[in-house]
Each structure stands twice: as structure tokens, then as C-alpha cells.
Length: 483
Image 1 (tube, rainbow, N blue to C red):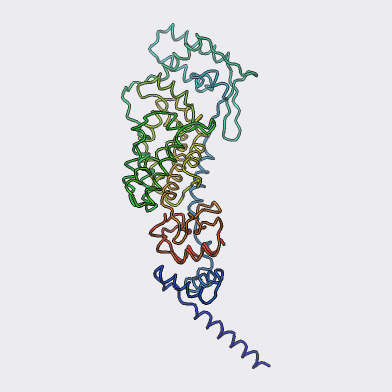
Image 2 (cartoon, rainbow, N blue to C red):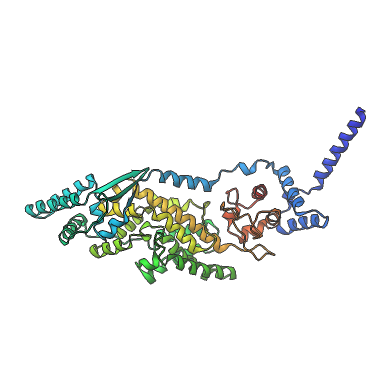
């Protein structure tokens, strides 16, 4: 009896050795052609797609000890999101009642001053060149306005909601009151230094670096042309809110439409092999996409138009903010854009929907940004950390979607297929290689057959599942675990 059991065990061991040895060491298959022949041979022997995929993964496990590989790599995309969320948790936001802004189309920012800011305004009057009797009169008028139109400040979590204290919120400033607020604004906006650097969010470094590093990190063949073309829309339209902006609350603005138009041109040229022409339109599209990463391109249109009219010397809120971003680019912001190669976001419905997503993300800061800069035009970036942190979050989101733009332009159908691969489960990895709106064993075999082709023809990041910058068997193992 013991001999029979021993013989059975021996036969089982021989069978296992024979089975394992029958599986060729696929790590020695160095080319797409050799891997395809290996797969075709198994198909000819009658193996199913699932059985072939299992054999591939078994061999990877045996040769690379990859049993736990899908859990062994830290997800850098999630780290980026956690970093952004950490910053968001530390930002105090402001939201101002719409009725107040409609009733007082320009000077509402002075009306919502809290006690600290009121003291700053009053001290500015005292430091002004007005005659003493005029200082006394202006202070008295300002105090009377604040008393007549009291504000309610309600803080929920980290957001302060500001609205008129009176129940019906009916505010109608008299002509005299408007003149008083105008005079206060002129005193508050006065600056000793009449020189003002040129704003650079519009071209360089912001637009240039966003698309340049997205292209470079994604393996796009011509990042320089894309970056150098990113400023062209400004040459056509200049400072034009209807074209270069998008307000998600109102659903108006031309940035999404223009981003989509140039994205389509870029994709078509790229697929046809006209890289230079594709790169120009990549740059154009990225401009509209990242313009709305600036919160001041997503709202406060009327306020900013008035602000530019009353502050024509480059000390308007919009210009001051763009100058700030440019001046602090190297120290505070560039590294966030350069180091964001592993994280991308994209709405696969198109560049228009992705542009709207960027605008929606940055729009949550527009009240805070506009209000704070208006209150402290000459020193807002030294007041506290809010400017830097808001800018970092907005640039990170812009960078993620710019990475997505490059990925979408470069994406191709796999050989023998007509449908584009998709991010079926919306985890920012593209696992649906055959474009059939699912993740299956066919995708595993496609990845195995076209390891070299992916690295040469597709954007690397969405197919580099372990985020180490390479297309390899370890990625294939992770893909198999998704099926």
C-alpha cells in the first residue's frame, strides 16, 4: 500500500516537472515577434485565451517571484492626490453672497471688510496725502457705510460665508456712498513704485513649463515646439474673458471649445505622422486648458473688467496675481510641475470636458483669491500662505490634465484593432487594450505580445502600471490581477 502511494507521488511530481518544463522561459523571449509566435503556438494546440493568459502569468511568477507584485509598488498617483488634499485642508476659503455682488458691482470687497481690514483701511486714510479735515470726513463716511450695511460672517469648516446681515439683503448704494468707496479704493490701491513687471501666466514660464514637462515626461517626440506654441492664443486674443475663460457656475466661456478644436487637430496630425503640426496644436490646446487653471479665469469677469479700468497701471488684481506666480515660479511652483510625471487626469470625452474639469477645480478659489488680493494689493503674497497653497493646488491640477492631454494625443489603437484603448475602470491606468469597454484575458495577451510596441508607440504613463518608467512583465502581472 505504501509503495502505491509513493508511486503516485512520484508520478505527480514528474507530471508537474514536465508541465513546468513545457512552459518555455518567456523571459528569454526578447521581441514582440517571438512572444507572438509563442502565443500562436499555444493557440494552435487548442489553448483558450484564459489558459494562455494563465500560462503567461505562471511563468512570470516562476521566473521573477512576482506573486505579490501588484501590492509591492506605492501608487504615486495617489500620493499626488493626498498631497493636494493635505494642502486643501489647510486653506481658509471665502465665499461671498451673489446678491451682494450684484447690488454692488465693484466696491463690494470694501463692504465685506472684517474688523481687522476696517482698521487697515482707516489707517491707510490716515497715511494718505489728504488734508486732515478730509481724512476725518472720509473716515466718518466710511464708518457710516459699514454701519448701514452690516455683514454676516458664518464659518463652516474652513470656509467663511459672507452675506448682508439684513434679512432681505437689499443693498442700494447712493451716489455719495459710491463716491466714498471709490475714494477709499484709490487710496488703498496707491503704490509708491510705479513700475510693474509684465505678467507671465499667459506665456512663460507657466504655460511653457506646463506643456513642456508634460510632453517630456510622457515621451512626446517634440516637447519644445509644443511649449513654444503655447503662447500663440494670447497673440490672437490677448486678455479676452469670453474666449480664454470658462465660468463653471454660468456655463459660459470659450476655453473648452477652443481647447477641443486644437486637440482634434493635434490628434489627427499626430496619427498621420505630422509631428511638427501636431505639436503646434498641442501647444495651442494646452493654453486654453491651463488658462482656466488660474482661478481668475473662471469667474469675477465683471469685477476684473472694472478693476482693470480703474487700475490701468498694472496694479489690477489679475495682473498682480500673474506677476506673483511668475516671480515665485522657480522657488515655489516649477518643481511641482516638473515632478508630476506619474499623475494624470483626463476626461476621455474630450479636451472640452477636461478643460471644464480644470475650471471647476480652480473656480472654488476665485472668491478667496480676488478678495484677498483686492484688500492687500501690494503685499498679498506676504500676508500668509494662502496664495502659494492655492497656486500649488491649481498648478498641480493643471499639470495632471496637461499630462492627460499628451496621453490622449499620443494614444493609438493596438495592431489589428480599430478602437482606442480605454481607461475602463477610471483608475487612470489604461487596461482595456482592445477597446471593447472591459478588461479581459485578451488584453493580457495583447500586452504580452506588444511590450516593445507599447514602449515605442503609446504614451508610457497610462500603461506603466507600477509607475517605474518602464513597460515590462511586472506591469503585465498587475494587468492580469485586474481581470
